[in-house]
Image: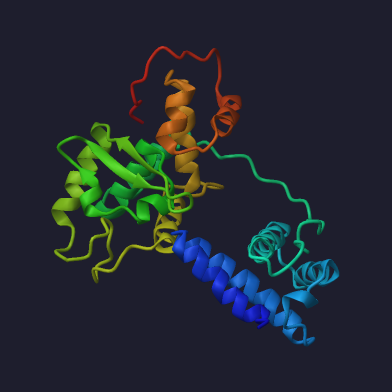
Length: 288
């Protein structure tokens, strides 16, 4: 018996859960596809067989009229492409109607690399807040993603071995990341004052709830302002780590592994921010 587009949407999300996709991925796909389903349902298009390339192009145009950025439109179209690929792979549709839809172009802004003066000023600005101070230092000294930091569990931090076990919430890949002395010190200081709770997440709020990505981002943005740093985002701490490691001579492959890049070509793009000749004789983790 034929199922409606909305019913297949629920099955699609369930499939993503089984594949252990990140919560953020589920939310994005859920909202993006839901938005499209609501649009076509208003025109009584409720079955997969009723969906055409023209309907998806109209959805894209509608988003643009509502002043969504080109980047947001592309993300939503990619969500639809993944949804219809799921339907095609399960024999519900013969072809993917989103595969040939034109996507708007947008420019990705270049990474903002903090100077030593800037990230030292950021440290000074948040020094009185041990939790944020630890978060900033770990992002700077390991280059991990903010989503990885937010998901870090207490039992994934080994202070004795100076190592952390990092889970990439998007790919599910697990990697070990060493702690240098600076990261080790701030983690010790934070854990000493961390609220006593059964919550497994390392960074928690005062009410012992997980410290979410959006809250971490807002807190660090506030300290950027207090430090007088303009045009910087939380992800720029990761960019800064990568460039500093490459500048110090840490091999490209090693840096790529440390930060969890899927392709070494992603790491290679940071070479443009280096001055002088690249020295690759050391695998020491440079302390920022």
